[in-house]
Length: 118
Image 1: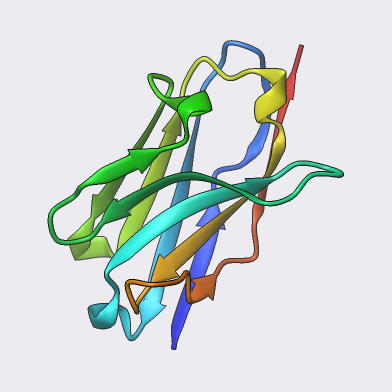
Image 2: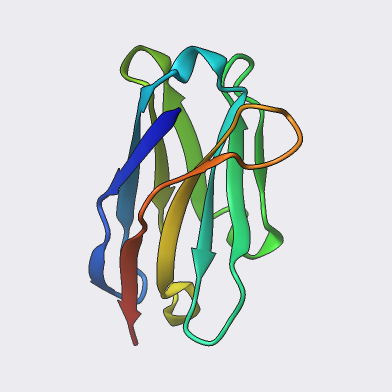
């Protein structure tokens, strides 16, 4: 099993920045990739960004490209999401996820709230 704990959420004004962290523990050696998802009130959970843990290949949803950056620190088993130029529509609960099977997101964190005021 893998345990994921997110931190770094909060309230920020539009145009501001936040950095989310996701610390992994447990059987982390088996992980292939980690990612961030978000769910706004009344909406389905959506993919935001992911990164492979070996090669560091990153993927982003179009709406955050150029504003968000995902990175990883393998020594700390931690993935970060640097969010700049935040918009009110970025308001959501952000979830960290880990992919062990290369076919699905197998483990999830509890989520951290990000609120962007206009």
